[in-house]
Length: 96
Image (spheres, rainbow, N blue to C red):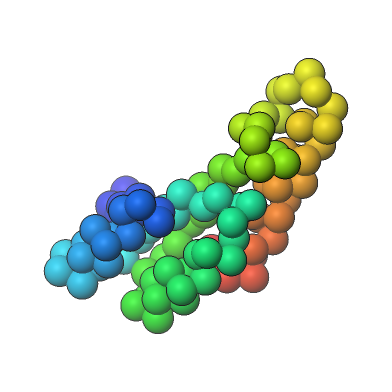
């Protein structure tokens, strides 16, 4: 088992502290794909600290609907699947 921590924009100060003071080497980022650009600084910093990162997808469809691959609404379902694919692609580029 690899012990790590979970962080996101609301808990980022605590995430940095855990890396700097506790030496954490593994992190799962609660990653809101529809605001991906807001994570650049956080992800760059974690990479520079040699922290292994995993991305936990979440997001909103059209800025108001929670993502849901089981939705009866075809548009929500398709956009959710695309968001998940986009999260995987970003993770692959970062070598998560």
